[in-house]
Image (cartoon, rainbow over all chains, first blue to last red; front, top):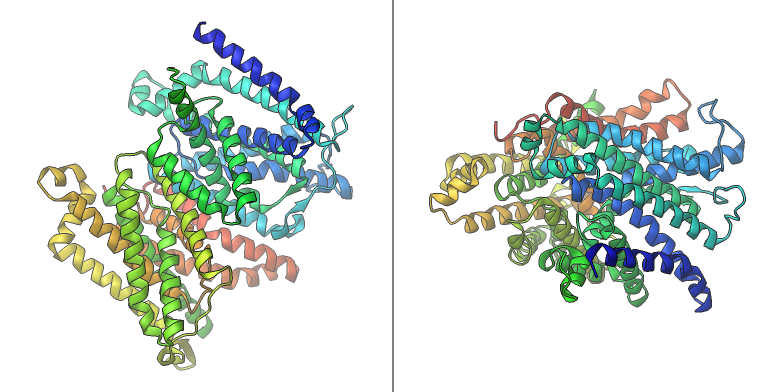
Length: 327
Length: 304
């Protein structure tokens, strides 16, 4: 079998499994599995967005939780204004329509990413890591002090956003909505990675000077990539706010940025679907460890240390090595 | 006026604490090329070890050697077991490995000491205030911290500019490979630098004990502020770290002290307090953004 046809077969199998998952979960009497899978999909989108700048572009952003949180807050704030009937800033009506809130969340987190990226990309390397972390922390404090929207306690969204014709109070429906969002997102992402733009971004990772010599402006390309990545994280945040029916400063906490990076490295840096596998591994690991001991962070830390020090390329590379598949 | 001077002193006190952290962090990055997130964990471990010993023995000063020893031990264990494998890796691996170290140390401390924060009083001799100017009373403990911080800064200055080790450190931060090529045992130099950074962090952690609560997560709080200092000062520059620490310390303290009051003149009291608190915790990051706009490499770039 050729490489591409086996890849196609695998993706069809994965797709069927993902579509059928809620039925199996119900059949096995484990409806919690559907919730787990929803979280994997959402974090998979966020981690894959991060991976676009981190793995493909070589920009180690330690502040992606900021965009994730902004996406969540857009949903929360629009819902609060919808519920209270008071327009936002005095003229923008709130809404609970998913088809409005998702694009709004994507656009606004993109705008935030544009501002943070424009400043942060003036530096590189270790400064870039520290600066993205610091800006994310700044937004964290911003939302903590935003008393009108819950401040420290966060913002409760009484009902998930509505989609005409769907019953969004049902967890399975939310799973399918997230699945559709994930499919669209990953399809766009793999198109982007294999486009001219994607090649430029990968080229910038290898050598900025070479790209400059060709006559490409590194800063502009990196900024656009950063904005796209922020939009993806914002989409994930908006989905998460709908799934949890809650948006809080915790979504922007710096450990969340760290967790997203962990997912990326668990799944394999610089691959399109790796972060999804990484998100799955991370979330399953987290819930297993948490059900086993309350000191799960210790186990997680040790596993992470082992993965970083001794495996190159994360779980995906490990699987490939075990099954002897060469890419 | 006395209140203003008191706030300046508070700012200086925060500044020298930040300097103790930033000096180590910036040296470790400048010379070893390592971004060490676990620097805050060493601070926390120093604080816990020192405070625990001081509480058990009842002698505050017994905490100092304990904090330094614990920080040195933790630091060398980290360097030997983990950091040493990261020199040749990219920043991503360094971030993740040291992030793992944070998770491990936070959980280990929780296992050892529980979730309750430790509280310790100031030492007897320093638990008073001094009249600096007529009408200006100031806590002698905080004054002692400022003095200690300035002493350490002076000591670092002398070591780095006047000794052979310091010469190697300077050379290492300018051109690592050249130093190695000249036959210097770079590994030993790395260990010394990392150990020095750990000692300073441990000292800072212990001194912070009586002012802040000693609790899990205290390390990350100061770590992120320290990052801002390092970025503003210029990565790898001790001089930059010193001035940036003082600037950030005073700036942050002033905002927290005066911003809510200023806002209260233009809006309702409770709103002003909330907005003031929020804006003042964002202040140092906005300052960092401003510095970056004007000087992307920081105020005192190390490799100019």
